[in-house]
Image 1 (cartoon, rainbow over the protein chains, first blue to last red):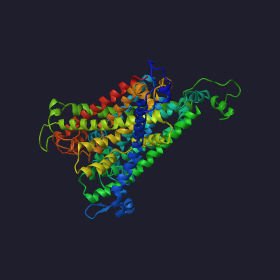
Image 2: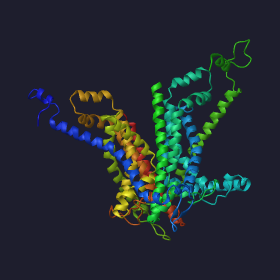
Image 3: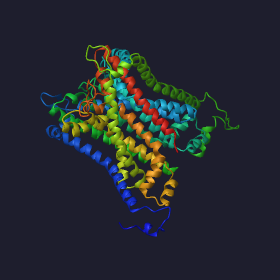
Image 4: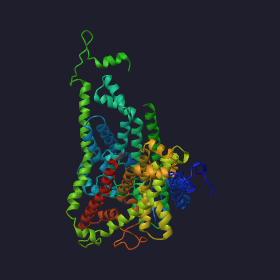
Length: 325
Length: 301
């Protein structure tokens, strides 16, 4: 092999030596491998889309877009529709976002805005992060034996006294939308809290000092200066939390009651796209599997759009803040 | 805010003639609102930490009461049977997590070196980084659906391989993104020094970047392991479940999370108790990896 320019220039018998030809070869090879690694991520995403889409193709051909607006799931007649699942997915995730988003943002403010000494705040942050470490299925088990018994008396009392309000229209007999949404809220809280904290940390301290200098109170500085400045990051926290809620499976499959219906009541059993997959897939025949693949494709499309939005907002917000300071 | 408005905001009402009173009064509306909001934040933070303690309490009381050595060595009981354990499920979970780690760590670290070192701002790197971030929010059940479509249908059977690969899909983005962050924290001047000595970029990466960033990379790996060890949705129709000991990687395999899911809906007290005990074991496994990642992450450069 021809020696490279460094090798030609090296004096004979020197202790140090320039990269040999084989070093260059290894370098080439390794860089090629690294390119493969990075491309693999992109290929994986494309392959997931292609494979699930391909499996769903027969069902798309059979059911067209009527699949999205039909409320029927009948294996015998091969009639499938996922409107109740789309409704249940959005309804439970929005409820979870409402509760989890509020508490997550409050916790983030509480931990970053000088309410606690830094060391105590770190301990508290670890506690909230630990919530994210508890497996979904354990939350499901906890929901069945703790949350449902705890809220059933309240739910049934609300149904008896305020039953004319559609939200309290049915009684809570066991699994239902509200316990599922509550557990879902707990599961997205760490996501929302962590990303919001990072967003609030990014705001330069002198911004807050400037607000204090203008004579604001502690909370005026938080609500009128800090939160609006970090709004981009907080918005992405909400969107990504929502995305997490949309795709959450096990806890919902255990708590939501798996009932194919559209009901405004918080206490009625419902069904989500993910829990439909979890409960029907293992025993499905070929035709039903195709319909389930179609449902999976819809879930994939919804979560992809939501997550891409969240990631894009986050990237944009981080760039804007770090560009300004 | 204009200058005048600012002064009006600081000065108490009626301070036109005398000097403004700068003392803070707690009965003033703005100060009162601040105090009330602070109290609200304390209460909300307290409420937010209740679920964790409730879960831990239930795990220790319900699961701890049943914990014994038999649980770890015996097979799951059938319907009315008493006793039993979930040794095969622990083995299954560990084996599938190991498969996931073996697949996703090399690919993840390779991809991360490209993203962090070789061409951080290139089009391939930006695309891969964006998709990795999107993949972190990928619903875990869809990883199961995907692997069902590519492996279970092809092999004609549920298997530990399929379960492990679906977990690898979920673990990959965590490994890539944390490893990239870790490599970015290696100081520029160390890399420049290596290149200035005549290292090729590969030598620079292997001798400088990877050893220096190792704690951070391990943190990411541990986080990834902790994340997938508790997953159950992707295993539902890739690994399925089995009531027997793992004998081959090409057969349906038991896992702790699926055992909890199956037993939670059974009407027998024995199974419910086992589900709680399995939850305790599962949470302990996840916490061990989580704590490991924290310990490793603390020894930063």
